Image 1 (cartoon, helix red, strand yellow):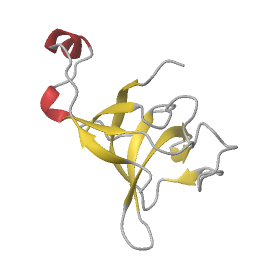
Image 2 (cartoon, helix red, strand yellow; image 1 turned 90 degrees about the vertical axis):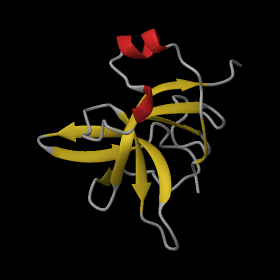
Image 3 (cartoon, one colour; image 1 turned 135 degrees about the vertical axis):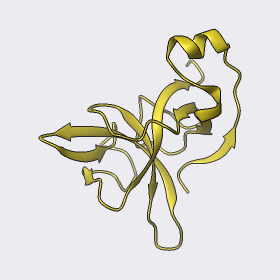
Image 4 (cartoon, helix red, strand yellow; image 1 turned 180 degrees about the vertical axis):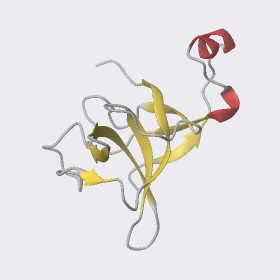
Length: 121
């Protein structure tokens, strides 16, 4: 799977409240692969809202993608145009299966990415 390792991070409640986020609706995973570089790099923490599943233009979402053996998690950017939703990688030159946009059919939106954090170079 391209995305794995669910963990928890600590955020101040007032910080979450300013963004209208409820801690009970948030989950964390960590980036793997290069498809969303430079926005999200391998090892970056990804905080996402499980209640925000309607794609908004240019938003970044955690998706459940059907696979040959099992579903896999992926994180992609939504493009919403004329009522159509597609998902794209930020890094079209990377070594991954998302070089072309994909329609939303068959993909389950798990939640919207609200915060990412990673190591400074």
